Image (cartoon, rainbow, N blue to C red; front, side):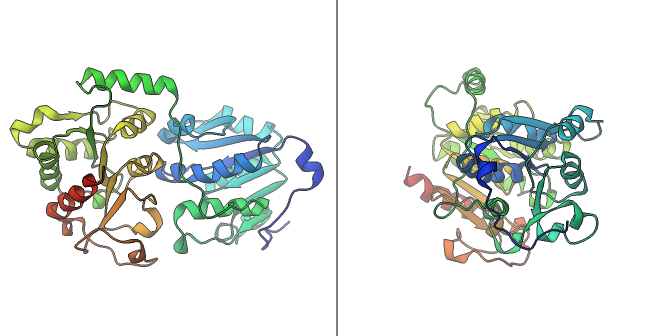
Length: 362
């Protein structure tokens, strides 16, 4: 059967009466997984009795515990056999599979799972064998949509549409993680309800880094002008660690005692918990900014070589600074196509100016 061009396939009465088993495949980057949460939230609401299995990959799988509505979680570990995962996909009787990626690996998972209804985006289903593997497809184009809307659009292949407008981005932190994070913060002198800022300067793409000296100036401003301690979060990548070390070295000596570096020492769910307790979050276009958006924290996100139209936080406490612009973008200034800009075009004065205005409203 070739992939259908239609995107609306209502379930039969017989299908609705029994528990459906739905496979959701999201094995791309951490940010993509976070921005798939609204689609999963909508899926759970419309299929309350379904058994939903989520497949993730790598370290991003840590966040599965923060995504509500999942019954089963399978994590693909790069470089390993993943025999248990493939065996589970082969043996479970799935009714639907939703491939949010379209990579060769995720297509293979859709094929092995053998669901009666296998959905992906039209762009990913045009050539053999994909046009045989997938039976339903969504024409939604990421070039024209915010990533949240693009993910949610795949549910239309099941006849599921948002109630009104966009499904909100929400995560839930397990209580044990909250307790662990509280103890970590207390160990660094951060008391309950104490205000603090989070800086997440790292990212997987070096061209999205902002200058270490500029971050240091913003940290100094937060400490001396706003009386906020600063927590730095990040991963354990060698380049990211070097970047963070450069930032800390450029902070004024008298401010360093109020800078807490948690990068590479806490899990992704713990990072989410730290962010959820913060007063304000600043960073570049990376997964941590989506975590901040999930808790609607006041935040500033710096963009340069990537387009904020597709990846920006959508709540009203978020501010986007795009390189080449002298102020935070207003909602009507986001465009589907923009040139790439160097992060060095963003000045520390721009960031501290937006920060001052944002904190006035808190």
